[in-house]
Image 1 (tube, helix red, strand yellow):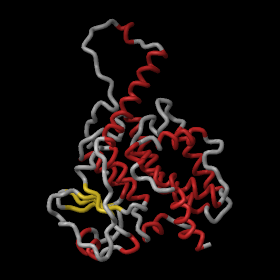
Image 2: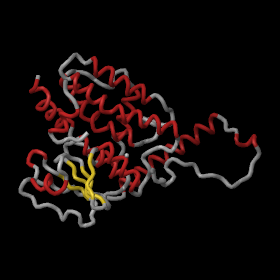
Image 3: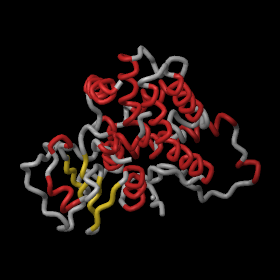
Image 4: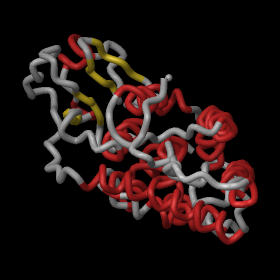
Length: 297
C-alpha cells in the first residue's frame, strides 16, 4: 500500500494566532440600541454573512495581488548556495512538490512575496549544500527564519500564519478552529487512501472524496471547508489539484461527479490568486503520477 512516507523519500515532506485585517470580523457599532434592535432577520443575517465572506476573500486577494513575482530558476547540483543565515527569510521549495506548494500558497495569500524569498530546488539534481548546510533531512519545504530552519509543511503553514503579517488564515471561532484541526489531522489519511486506490477499484477514493464532500457541507457561509478560505483549503488543494486529472485520465473517475460541493470548492479555489501562482499544467501532474505510480503496478 502506498503511503505518504513514500512521497517524502522522493522529495516531499509530510504549529498564537495573529490578528487579521478584519478578514473575519464585523466592525462593531458605537450606537446604543434596545434589545429588540439586535434581533436580526434571516435576510439581515444572510447579508451580514455575505459581507464577512466578501471581506475575507478581498483581504486574501489583495495580499496575493500586491506583489507580482518573477519566479527564479530551480537550483541544481552546480548552483552556488545563497548566503545562508544572513537575516533573510527563505522558503526552500520545489515547483513540483505538493507539500512545498502548501507553504508557497500560504506565503502568497499572506502577501509575503517581498518578505519571504523563494529558493526553488531541483529535486532530481539537488545541490549537496542543501543537505549539508540548510536542512539535513534533505526534503522540501523548509523555512529559514531567525537563524533557524524549520520543516514539515503542515507545521510551516501554521507557523507562517501565526508569525508573519497579512490576513489571518485560521478562524477565531472555537467551533471552526476545532473542525479545522480535525480536517488538517485527516489530510494524510485522505491522501494515503486516494493513492492506495490507484492500484485498486477506487472504493478507497470514493470514501475519501465522500468525506471531503461532507466536510464542505458543514458551513453555509461560503464554498470553502470553514465557509471562508483558510489553511484547511491550502492543506488539501495541492493534492486535489493532482488527483483530479490523474484519476480522470487513468481511471475515468470524475471526483466531482455527484459531489457539487467539491466541484464548487475547486471552482472557487481556482480564483484565489495566491494559489493560481503555484499551479502547474494538469497534464504535467498526470505524466508525473503515471511515471511514479503506474510503473510500480
